[in-house]
Image 1: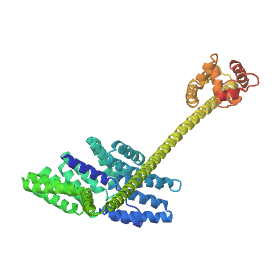
Image 2: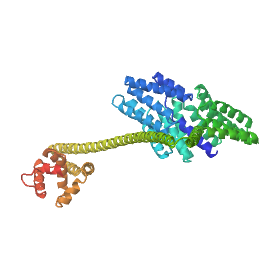
Image 3: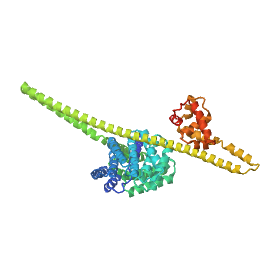
Image 4: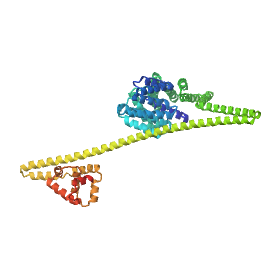
Length: 536
């Protein structure tokens, strides 16, 4: 496969990964979708624009967002900037729906991100495109996505890994995409996925498997009247017969059928792909005259891509010739007329020229200003999206803190309950006086130390109150480990009774420990110990 064919295949893959799921209720969007599948972009754009204007008039945000998304799909092929503009506007409309219809807003957001990913791919911003498609996959892979967006994201990732020549990764994503489309019986995307899986099986020399995929692709494409997909399937079948059976005649028949369909499409890349497939057959048949004819036709079609520019150049040359001819006549007339009349003509010509120059300059600057405003708006919208992601991260951090605080509270409660239970066991044992009770009391006293509980307590306490112990030790080196425990319990705003239960000592002992702690912290009688600890 040469470089041109590779580029065409990538473009076709990108095009196929742009279409979204069929609108479910809006009749205008349904008609636009049907026209879009059948390669009638102008008709589709008309329906989508009519749906947009109707939604705007009725103040229907959901239909407006949907229509803008499909306008982006129709527009980006001819103008990436326009497609990105529609996609961004749709993204904002879906964002406005978050409060009233969060589920529709969420799915709409990821559909917009997938369209933007496709546009980035066309702009050769492959890393940005991959990042967006991966985000779509992460958010939708475990959900029941009925919009087809997850399958499109898988297809985009498969194409992007293809470009990186990482066939193992691309094969995996193409298989995932096919699974998604088969699960939802999405006839708009199935032919492309079947063709891609056929090419993978053909590369692996799986003869029957690849033929089955190509036949499936053609069947689904014909039933849905998807001409682009039919061209791809016919070319895939032709290549299969060349590769496995060396049957040039049958391959040629498939390629000729593909060419007939491709000639009716507005996208000329399909016609080029069909012609280049025929060239490959004719070379194997040693029909070099036909090869030359077909190559000339390919060149002619590619030249037609630039026919509009050439027409503009011709018109420009004609205008230059007309201006030169007028100047020549003016010189002839000036030789016969008075100097004053010549001066008048020159002044009029100069004024006209200046007017044209200023008019052109005005519209040029106006266009630049409009483009800069659009770019600025797009950047502001992207900044807003980044800010939104930042807020989500902050919320996650806050949730982590709350979780740790709940864990700390749970450990504290556990320590209180454990010591209360042990105290109750002691009191029961004290009522009896067998000879073995002394051993039991000793064992109970041993496990009231709660080393493990204190380790867990210290771990969660430090995760919520960063460097609390360290700050106290640095400022007051004489403070002991027991004093630090008292400080931690005061920090949790526990009562003296609760502290006594946790430490397994009497309330009076707690009061004594608090009094000693005040001295070590060098607090005056007016200063409140609890307020001081809370401020550390």
